[in-house]
Image 1 (cartoon, rainbow, N blue to C red):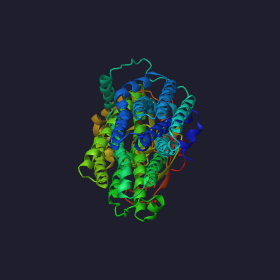
Image 2: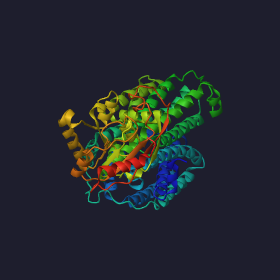
Image 3: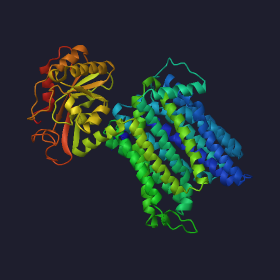
Image 4: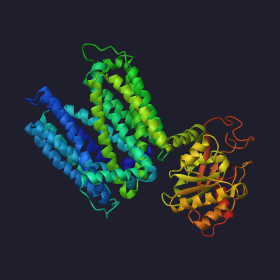
Length: 623
């Protein structure tokens, strides 16, 4: 069972998950019920008036994200989160009572106006929804928690769309009762969310929308990796809103399917998002693995392009249902593309959300999520306008999908060029998961925050990459400068901000600079890893430790965590066969290796022999 599913059994996650699930469900229950009522049931509403009301409704729901996200971010940082969520859910109950009244009065104008209040409630909930996760979950649960939230959100959207069709069929009073009951259930679920301390209780709330919008966007830009992750999420919604908006007409006019085929493809996309989210958790190995983001971006392009070429379906005069649609051989390709677009989206978006939560300053996390919501809303509006412009100028829906896929490739290359860490992490992930199967034990001994010095035996040229691929926190590696300069590995090490070092006889200046950079990193609360043997083993046995590690601890006495790698001796990257990398795949692919972490060593009075023995005991007899 995935760890994310197990989270549902924990009181620190289950009430929150149910709360946000019911909220997303109710939003779509109300919005789709409103759309069906205006389009099919409202008396005296012409087609032109219907189109106007539907588009005004969409705009009114998005507008509050521009107006109130800055305030929502401040409130989520200043106040205790469980209390704030309960108040927001009470607001939803009040809004749904008004909505129920509008349904019973058969008033399209009032229903649309209340949609603005719903957007306001959603805008207030957004920042606290995502900033709660890093407080409620352990670092190793963050990816799984985000996977569950994304899966739950898309399933709730899908179920809201489907169930609204059946409920509205029983009349407006049934819809009125459904939205009120769902909102009350959401408030009831929120009462189980445990207390979480305020991140910035001293924060003074500002109601100046313009200045606070500029301020939170500036906060998001303070960490460029976080900011470009926000931009990446916004771009995903640009693509997503394009597919979702155009899917009904794509089904009707390009595939010849009826509304049930539309629901079928929407369900496939939603389930694909869920599958991609869970796959992301599985492939990440309990760390925030942003190396999967390029995989997701590649999938969004490849399957978007293939969707354009999935033509040739015979569109009959009479619309076909799901059985007839699936019965056409070429339709299976369309279904596969839709599912894989969802899977790619899950691989793409889950690590980005987790990265924002992990690397944002805790006291400002909610405001950065608010900045994300503002940009998401902006990108969705622009996507809608772009789609309207393109289609009105003769662009077909399949061609629009092709344009979006190609634009996605260009945007991905642009972002990954600005933040090469994504490609670096991809290369690390590919290496670790192509050559090796890693058994990890004791990694909880590495502190979740604050400075620490990791010491490890040195077996192969990829020791640092294996450690980087398995340990949750970013690591500053100290490594021999000649390894630092190796082709391909050099790109990875430079991007990871590794610290090259040389012996005093080789380059005394570089050695002194290395110790200065190590000290700076530790004083900034970072994790530094050093291989105290000073060189790769030539016979599989551990060498004596060099005194440089003591020099580091004398200047900055931080906890020392011993690590040991087992099973790398004899691999392609070791010197077991003479020169490293001289025999291709000497042990085949996916070799099992082990990474062990021991209890932290007190830096006061630590000796070289004591540290060496700790690593030796973890490594055991097998190199």
